[in-house]
Image 1: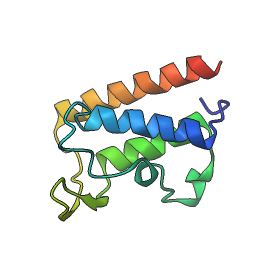
Image 2: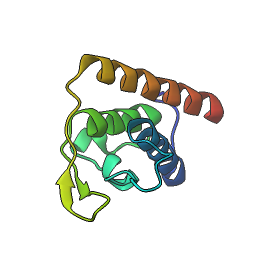
Image 3: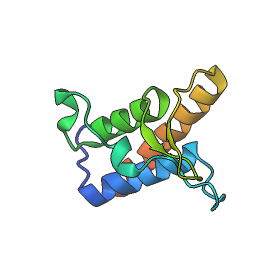
Image 4: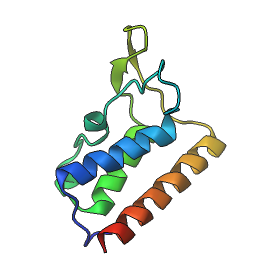
Length: 108
C-alpha cells in the first residue's frame, strides 16, 4: 500500500467512503457531522505523504481516536467522540481495511 499513490480526488473518495462506514449514509436528515477534509487532515509531519497506507492511517486515526469539531444536524457545534467499544472498533477497522484493499486493487 505504500507504493500506491492517491491523488486528491481519490483521497477524498476514500474519506467519503470511510464516513459512510462510520455514519449512516441513508439518513439524509442526519449527515455526517464532519467532512472528508477533516479526516484527511495531517496531524504529524510523517503523515504528509499521499500513499494509500498513510491516507488509510490518517483516516483510521481520525475516525477512531480524534475529537474533531463539526456541526450536528440542528447546526449546534459539537465534537466527535472516540470509539471505545471493542466490537465497534473491530467492525470499523475491518471495514476500513477492506476499503483500502479495494482501493489498492482498483489502482493496480
